[in-house]
Length: 135
Image (cartoon, rainbow, N blue to C red):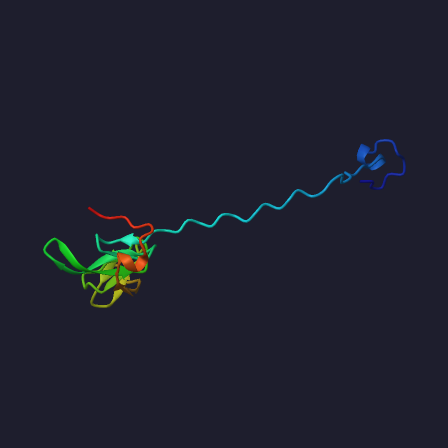
């Protein structure tokens, strides 16, 4: 802390008699391993079928108010397209089925390629853990 000072008067106390901490014990123990993150349950489509976590259930075959076959879009909060085979990310919610693209808005020319759905699995294929039934 001394800079161009020949005389000790006017020096900062730390420059006259510096002191440093002295270690008197062991280091504290390292924390244990962090607990595992909780397992997300699958996305439940209906009483019989579900999709993997972080995916969206989309109906593939609908008759009246009932869905007889489900598909899984590999994105959370996705938009299911009317062709019953593709889906779009929530940032691009407008399906252009003829072009196979997803748009931000109906008149916007910029978009991304639509994603294909995969078949939903019966609940027993995911195991019974984390299963929620839909009434």
